[in-house]
Image (cartoon, rainbow, N blue to C red; front, side):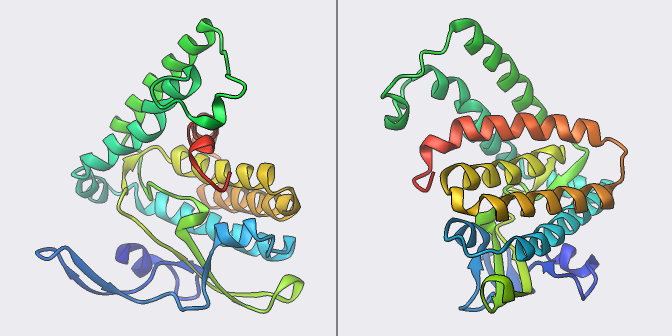
Length: 256
């Protein structure tokens, strides 16, 4: 987190809180507070508190930010350091891909939202989903293209702004919760973020215009900063992660 703050320009709209003390013995960290008037991006979305113009500003800043994370995360020394976070790899693989088949088949979880009516997915489709889940979980556990944020979604983005609606001015954006940072493929971060924006549009239709503007600006800024190389594969992994995230997390999240 501090490394990213150090390499980002001081003028970057999106950044991380400054760390003042890291005590590895006591597992304690002292860092800046984002301010009592700051709110999460998810909160802004579900409250329909974003104008499309403000959403584009936030999306562009976050696309720039994530591109910087992934570009800095190509360094072999950085990848080697985060390789030690094996628990993050296993947890991420289980939480999404490890629960896909159980979710679709109505297994042990018996999620209430999926029981009336039951999904009744044909076995051949379940088999195909399992193949995708197994292959992508393996990629999540082994890929080393870049270092990921690991849990990049609007709930981990805090926005500090003044004014409301069309007059809102974004002062700062903080990206929090880096506990699941690990080596991986950049498409996982991109796909998770876009999946949450899809859910916002689907379950809070009034925010659809702002969520779409945010996503368009986010993807445009990310691609502009990363370039075209490897973007087709980033898009493929992002789409796979988006779809799996929707299948597994929607029925488990009260706001959706």
